[in-house]
Image (cartoon, rainbow, N blue to C red; front, side):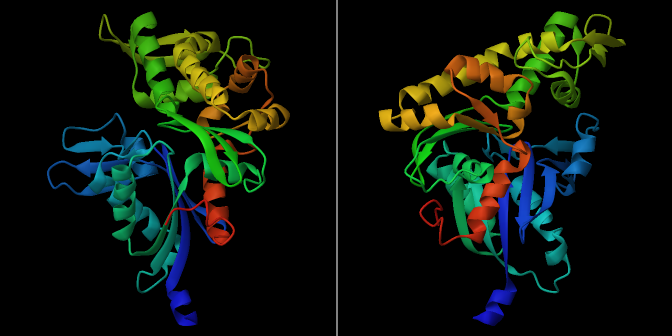
Length: 342
């Protein structure tokens, strides 16, 4: 048994729409954008992660950049499999091995996933030489990552705003009591910004530029304390076709994102209205926890706090909360075995 243990590596994967993170031996070894570049003539994958991300929006007809995951689930089976394979191969400890080790994996999945989509994740992992595969729901992993003791008979509410989906869940006794998954998250914010620039400024910008605007001056509300400075944005003028530059402020971005944030607020209110009264009392005392990259949007916590009349806390490092929780579940499989799906 000891010898076979040596042949097995434990890894935890947060397979996100925007980023894929992998934990090995308690350390984050891979943190890469979930994107691949494929050569159309040969069908071969020529770049993944950061390399492929640099190519986005700048390719010619023979190269196509693909995001294999859509709304938190696998949309392009072959590309996602190839991507995960390459990521696993590039883990330093596995790279050194003569023979590929068999893997024990914990993979994070959205709570609104269907059985067919679950099967697709499992099949992908099977092809990766995985001996044991466990799945864990995203809000559950986020709660563990934020530092909540999910096994207590106490209600906690967690909102995980990723790239493809926003997962809202009320957790108690190691289970999800009520949850809601909405397909409004970071990607929708990005396309809202691009749409706003087209309609209000006649400026056509790419996905990467919209993403940059979101990070630099993105805001959920117009009244934020330390407001970011105005930003210069370059793109193509829709009327003349010439390259042009415009100056925009965070207030404009708050307007552009308003409709999408209202949808998240509605989903939060709906989840609260379905929560059993005893757990509602707990949530009144503990507040709401935010995780995921989308929760870093300026003023989002205060806006949700105003809507729900509850304190809202953003996780210490929201981008890695989910993978941290997935890694913790992998380390203590016995403790969390009721939470993990084999």
